[in-house]
Amino acid sequence: MRQFVADASHELRTPLTSIRGYTELVLLSEQLTPSGTSALRRVDSESRRMSALVEDLLLLARLDEGQRGEAEAVDLTDLLMETTQDSKVAAQDHAWSLQLPEEPVMVHAVESELRQILINLLSNAAKHTAAGTHIRVSLAAAQGVATLSIEDDGAGIPPEFLEQIFTRFSRADAARASSNGSNSSGLGLAIVEALAKANQGTVDVTSVPGRTCFTLTLPSL
Image 1 (cartoon, rainbow, N blue to C red):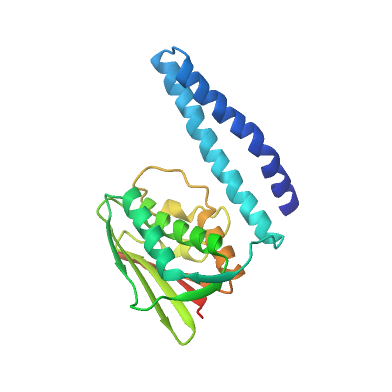
Image 2 (image 1 turned 120 degrees about the vertical axis):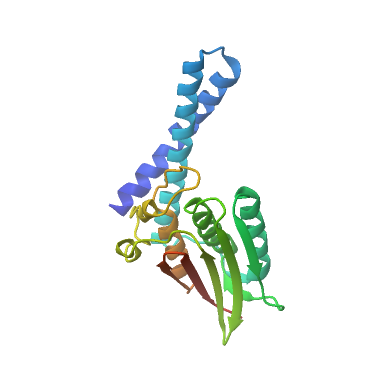
């Protein structure tokens, strides 16, 4: 099944790229009725969503097969500052705060994978909480362990979803109110867990109404 998903995802990349390209070409070059423009924009939106799903499936397939980049010393402090700033720009209707230690926190990991973990966790907090939600991001290091927390004061996740929230296609995000109406694939948190494990780390979540906290731990240098 995993091989099938990997093969199918690989074969879908080219036709999806073609669909997006031709859709953009028609929108830019042809005179369309309002309903025709609306329909093509819908095609473009759905093809982009499908492309994102395919890329997520390919990433999981590569991890299943052990295909990864080279691990190196990574400054988690700088990486967290950068990704949090990007998230603040993307979700300006949320309140953000960032707490970092005075000294850099170094970990031995694949930088691109750590970046993907942070992007997924931060975007998850913003997408599935209402405007005005406060998202607190913090990082600490002690006794050879780096601990990163992303906490929000949103509505929370129902207990029945917590046990399966990192399962592929669990769609546990449906339990949280989306601020932008996005239709998530249900793979974002599965990717976070897979990447955390690949870098000898763990990811956990606790949630009650008014407080949801995702915690990532990694061995520090």
